[in-house]
Image (cartoon, rainbow, N blue to C red; front, side, top):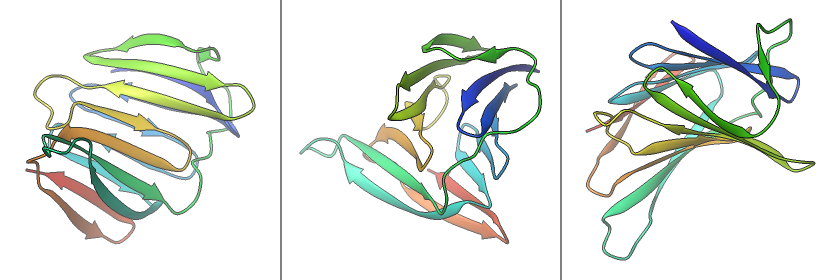
Amino acid sequence: MRRIDIAWPGGFLRLSSNDELVIEASNTRLTLSAREVTIDKLFLGFREYPLDRRLQRKIVYIDFAFPIKGLTGSPEVLVTSSGDYSLGRFGILYTVIDGVERYVTIYVPPEFLYEHAILSSSKLALVMLGRRQVYLSSEDTLKRIILV
């Protein structure tokens, strides 16, 4: 399993990958797989918006109840500056806007049902084809966004 630690408010986020990408924080765990996204504890809701008039592409915002907080402790190798990184089959673009926000753009493998994901402290955005259907499955604090 490959992993990377990136600087985040309160500490760092740990990203690890095999067939799916797992993002660990002190108050949540996100898992991005080919047909679903799993959110532990922080899920508030999701919204869908078309990206063009012909409805060929859309964006799904997954809102968090509270901001994502970084892990504490000592990371193996901490990434602190903006840049492109490779994590197995995933491309990671880490962006730091000084004094404003940090976000991570995740480029997924071609078999995924979404094109890419963007993670900020308050939400996760999934960009996909407009014809994709989005469903929610709930198990206690674990929520799954299922794509078909």
